[in-house]
View (cartoon, rainbow, N blue to C red):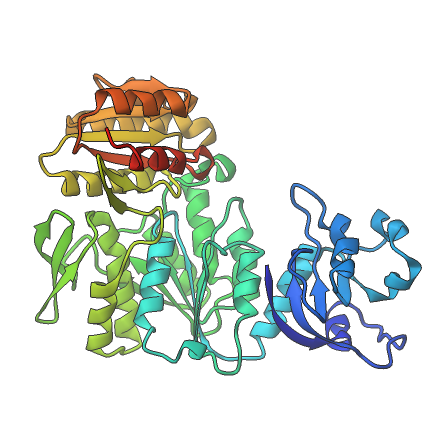
Amino acid sequence: MIAPFEYSLSTILSLFSSKPDWENPSNPKFQWISTSSREIKKNTVFVPLRGERDGHEFILDALKNGATGFLCEPNHPILKDLPITEHKKAIFVKDTLQALGTLANYHRNRFSPVLIAITGSSGKTTTKDLLGGLFGFLNPKSLVVTEKNYNNEIGVPFTLFRITENTRVVICEMGMNHRGEIKKLSHIAEPTHALITNIGSAHIENLKSRKNIAEEKIDIISGLRTGGVLFVPDDLEFLERAKVRTKQSKRNLVIWKHSKQPELKVNSVKKNGFILSWNNELIPWNIPGQKLLSNVRGMLAVGNYFAIPKNHILKTITSYKSPNKRLNILKGYYTIIDDCYNANPESMSSSIDACLQFAEKKEIVWVLGTMKELGTFSKYYHEKIGKELNQIGKGILLGLGEETLPMVKQVRGSKHFLEKNALIHYIKREIPKQSVILVKGSRSMKMEEIVSELQTFKG
């Protein structure tokens, strides 16, 4: 990743050391910050991060590509391999990832936009895009929205680096895999407002219980500025805990109605969505699935809070389109519902609901891959989805991956596959034309490979 970053060497050093550096009397100024040695421009400071490989190994590459400075952990072995003339370009920090967050927080605090942070077990991206649409009437230079899935300890800082003196609103998505990550992100971003879409089972392998997941999500208020507001749905699991923690931290809580007497009502159900009713207006929403409507109602709650004009709210709902690999309808020999971006028990159930609505009386094929990061709960949650499908009693289930076997065993007439090619061959041979096929699984299952094969199939 690379972003604009106009700071002098002395300013950066002041964040990490109490000792001024008099070795650089010219006090060079950087214009870019990058975590990739391949994305280097003139006057870039390179930030080497530890991942599958140690980013310090690429410092020399970054320098050869034009970097004029780099962060480095003290006494790192890579320093022995660098020409002595390059040592003066090093900015020593205890931890480069933590330093990236420190730099982003410093930059964020130079400005005063409305900053809305979003987290939840599912629905984060939908809500982020809806809120981006809600404020879409602003000058493009006034609005910053998280790009792609840049929602972790690397992505959030690069979202913040995009803030300028022209920025009025920032929509910042925050994800996590382990306990404590949301708290870190919240302290880096210091949101003025925050929103939790829901609390489910995603990453329960690492967090061990839904209660811990709830605490992790509610941690988004940790860095919330004084007088800040947290938005949550009325059916949020552990809602009482959210009430207690916001009160203890002297933050405000806004609860939007979703499960009971919502302000935004369903007037009628269509194959590919709903006609909604709000404020004496009938509004088309062109995506199936009742559960997604909570995200729309969350956007509406934010819109009402900020007194966004009615016409902008209406436009946000009517113009919304699903992101890639999220409930995309692809028509061909089969009608494929491509929802293969990722999966957890809650999003799987939501997608099943949407598929049922869309398919109406057509034949349904549930092509469901393993839901990862469930740990010892994997068997329970896969069985739970299987029981849900068995109760629905419609369509054929094709499970992919060893961990889907408990799901498959719950559904009469289902099939289990360990290899994608065998599953694809079965569909092409046995599934009739015009069938509706839902494809969904965790990111690591690469379910898009199935979509690609089926999309080009001509029969």
